[in-house]
Image (cartoon, rainbow, N blue to C red; front, side, top):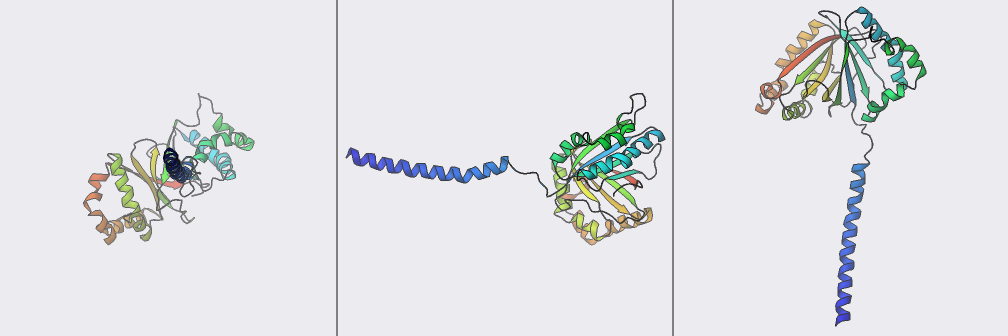
Length: 272
């Protein structure tokens, strides 16, 4: 009787062990996948830099840096379509805004170390890189790191003809409002309306590191201010937009606490 019970217990232990082993085997690939997930290439990350400048000399230093050193070095490292812009109608000395797209967070994290190994970059950018504290190349750099929207995961380059650009930032009262506004752009079709009406959007991005969070930032482009005014007028009157905008959960009063709009013009060497 004891031998029979022992045999039964062994069989039960074997079955239980087999079941647990199978379950563990099923879970291990998932755990491994989560921990070892490769860098995500399904959408871009953008560094948006705003250089505050005090005079024309600083502007010249920063522009020379991008034109003669930074853009070519970044291109060599696989970072394409670097945009550099100045204000269309500055009230004083123009800010300079740079848009640098990255394929992954790893690229963003390692880019400075990789640039420091480029002897030509160091030489061509020396005036900017080695500017003394008594005569700095710029006053400050404000940088934001943006994550591209799922429904516009990369840059879309506008025509090369003479154009103006509008950089818009929508600030939110809280993170939930930001999530809802991104849903409005992605899932409710707001991005599609922009494209259909000819706004020629360049990018849409959620600010994941930067000032005035939570916010999203996007860039659209026009031939001139007259076309800008006409496009926004058409947007406000668009039937699809009207359908979306009257949905209570998408009301601007719930989702947007502040809008900042900056009009820009590309420099002669900008790749956007």
